[in-house]
Length: 359
Image 1 (cartoon, rainbow, N blue to C red):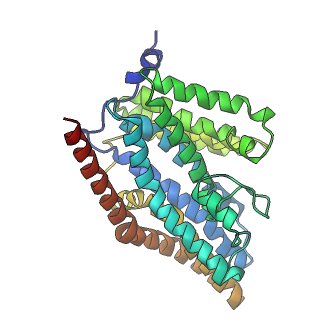
Image 2 (image 1 turned 90 degrees about the vertical axis):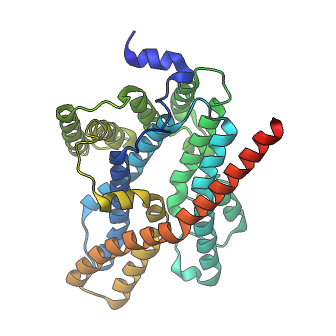
Image 3 (image 1 turned 30 degrees about the vertical axis):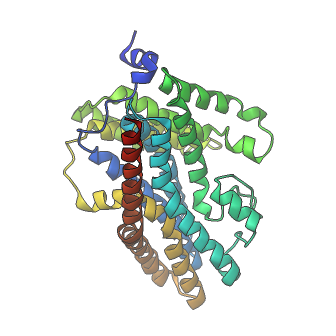
């Protein structure tokens, strides 16, 4: 039996050892930074279009989402402890995701009431607000399945994945295998999906979470510089080659190459010199992802209003990327990190009180 199949068969103990007492995987933070900035560059393309410049390769930046999903699958297996209960896991994920997302959602909803002309397909529909806050996918007037904060469609997948992962923690064994089986079964049902919810939650993009999980099972802290470099090069080359094939689903076009890329970067852990900027952007990646569109759309509207030429648009494009990153980092420092620390501290105190009462 292979090492992977052995780990998978163990189920409950198939995840990596507890992250407690282990150093943070710095290279994963760097990948988070790259993924977030890729999405920023993609949406900053609106600034170029406002200046009548079309540059198709920018669409590649949208694949940062696929990298995020692989990272998410990896991190959930890597950081989940055998002793962690479903309740503890769910609480940690909720604290990490919900407060900031709710804040941005309510802000956008307020804009839809006060200045609807600033928005496109987002309206002040209270039903859409409730669905957005409950992470229920719905189709907007533009035909896209997006919540009020349009980039939040990825969080609908993330929260579903977290719910599935939490459910697996209720099982006595074979937890990882259970999650992988459910994800695979869901994707197999995609051809038969009928309706927005069914089509959304059976998308092949779910396989990217599974890929990250499997990678965590296989990696187990290994380091190999030569193999790491080869895998990174293979991942980049695969994206370029697969992009020439029309009609490929993003789970193949980006998922497979980014799996190789992530594996390579993990094998290079310790070989890449620590980079403060990438580490900072990685820490702030969630805030950057949720706030960047305010900046890029502002720049786009300014360029369009000025009827600026290509030269000014190019400068504004670069400035919008830098400004979006800076705004995200600032939001992370001022809002996200303090709120997360505060709520995590409150939860820890409640857990301690609960354990004391049980003694």
